[in-house]
Amino acid sequence: MAFINIMEKMVDLRIEEHIKKDDMCKCENCKEDIKCIALNKLPPKYVSTSKGELFSKVDQMMDRQNVLDIEVAVMNAIDFVNKRPRHESRD
Ligand SMILES: [Zn+2]
Image: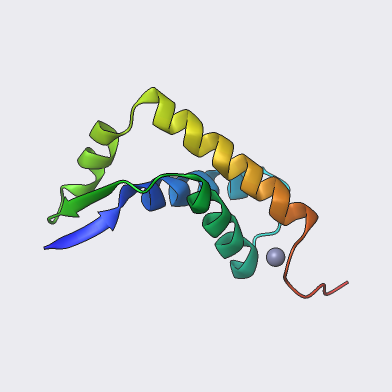
């Protein structure tokens, strides 16, 4: 039996969307930092997975409040990392 934290999946999806439209660093370091910071603010939500089930489950398990919490956590994490990036500056 495999388990995944669907919070992690949701955070990944939100970060990808912000990266496309926001003016922010897109390097792997910053993406990982954003993900860690956001996930530390959110309670994990584990589900067992079998093939093909994953995305329908993610939708079912997220209510409006979860979606809002995730959005706030991701935006705060992006803000934090933008102000204090850990990557080497190449300028
Ligand atoms: Zn960076």
